[in-house]
Image (cartoon, rainbow, N blue to C red; front, side, top):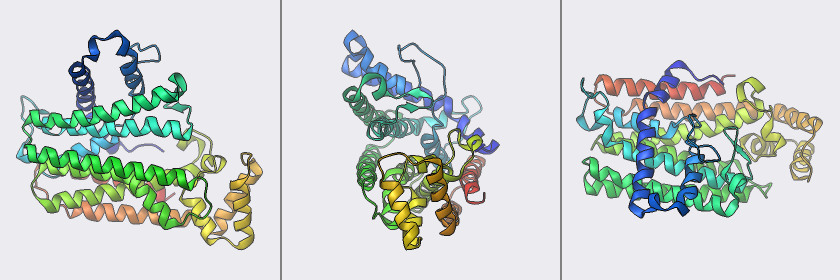
Length: 375
């Protein structure tokens, strides 16, 4: 699905600053432990740099854009919407005001990447961004360790806010928020793995799982940005609600695309989630609303040992049609987008050009995600 010009511009606007903050966070951490001078540890950090897209499998520097940096961008936009702590861009240093929020943006992105390394192991995904995953190249034990290292780096990166003038009490609040979010994500991953072996998962249980696994980090990013940008607690709460709603919508968008997107839109086989028998929202809705005969057929296909054939996938899609599953998922996504828009519009933000542009960018993110509910 093509990204709108506005969303693309927002994702590119802070890319350089975020990448610099990420590299600085890794460099400072390795310097603090003495790892930078230890030849034995170069490969360990090389595995992390490989996952982040900075080096190839031989640890040679490369130029690639392996991720959209969506979550740190969400944090920086929320920071701007909330008022950027009263700072405005200066002509001589147009990005100077961002320094207050960049350590937190780096921490959010490193947290996201530690979860991705662990997810790849648990899901046995052999590729990410068209490259072998860390566990596929260096084995599961070392990949677990690399993920743990990125988790620790994310915490160290966050404490760098103390060096850019953030009050220690606020820094501690941000750290506690990130820690709670990491625990929540782990809870969501536990539920996701638990649901893989069960056919009695309710829609409500699934929504609770994605609220923890996917939406929690987006809510955290928006809240952290808001906390760094203002002392207005209403603005902070509204932006957190925005982040959670857009996180839920983002996941259900993926669920819709995983079943109904074309090859051109998705970049991989249509109905891929059915072939993988992924317990996403469409199958759970169909199981809950199908006639007994259709429900039994769905259960048989999703519980068999062999992957579904094309004919079986066609059967599943036909049952989805009979249960109006696509319409339900589209309506759910649209409702989350409505919630996100309402929360964003209610943020008591300053009427500065910076805040207005950031609000417009966040509204464009909602519109982009909402497109999936209108196809």
